[in-house]
Length: 523
Image (tube, rainbow, N blue to C red; front, side):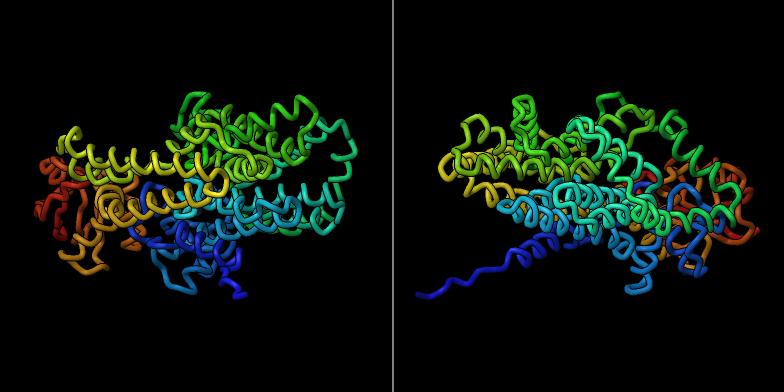
């Protein structure tokens, strides 16, 4: 009998991760304020050969710990400074997280190891933040791996896992600060209470592990405080306590904000995760639940509740809850894999697995061709989405769990493919400073100073990264004496001339971002 060629699970998993996390990683430029800002901080640290003090524009930038910056510095050193290299750390963190989930399930809950890891890989929240130059994926990866390591110790009593827990928690502290050990302590304390076992908590407080945490996490905090006496005030008081307790940074959202955000982060598996949560809660009430399921439910609830009571909310904060939902779903599916899914469950999952195809196909009309008649252009995307939803439903209804992987991963691949193949250009043109810098290159060398006037900070930080310059702002009196290029908000030629104190030559209008470009001669 001939043996069929079979791709090893780990190789298939790596290939899927490579597609979701690495393919066309720089298809569009850095967007928002955080991506270019963090990328530039890492570049300045590399140029100064300084692994302690983050700086932006030469001034100390003490808002965040250094883990992402260190990773980006290594990527820049290996591959050169680029937006691709700036995003590489998050992609690598996502790779490691997925492999950790695969290992954990294979070691402790064998049977859904590959499917559980693939479920996590395709989650919209993981894919999105794996492609972002930010601290969110670094925190999610280190925190989630730490929690899995702790449960591995709890179940096996092997101290190597407890040592790994403290080491990974220290990396979480270096990724985004004290939120990592705080959330871990709350999770474990509530889990211990649920098990009515105070020893679970006391045995977790292992002196060698605490020593590992201190040795890994604290040296940077001590060094940066010694060099920058304002660090504790800026980092702890302003960017942790004030960010949590006030709206100082203008990110207000309602209390329930993270419920829809988390559900979107689990797409295209949202319906199955919700089903897994309901199933686990019911089993817990009947005292039939696996301890891992209880641990995962507490993990999800603590993360969502903690950030929900924060006065400052951003989507990436809740990312550490996404892997717990994926593992919980894998647990649920392992129990249900021999059962035929109900018509309602199959239908709802088919809808959730396909619904993102519609906005992916409509991206061009959302960003560029905004005057298009949506009633006309939306017809074909709606038909395509409905057709794929119907195919998924029929596969699940007829083949059951055997078709789940293909029926969900294929639409996810289609969505990512559409977004990166056809939506990347509109995203780049409308949201990134990269095309603006390309236009500026037609009017002078890259060394020519660039200034801004009344533009969003996203544009300012993007110009700073792509031009590798400190960008002066006209509106606060930072007008260069020498010749320079000016990027201004559209429609303020008289304001530009008045602010510059001399004649400014209009170059062109960059309509896609409502910007005007000027040449300003030296005084």
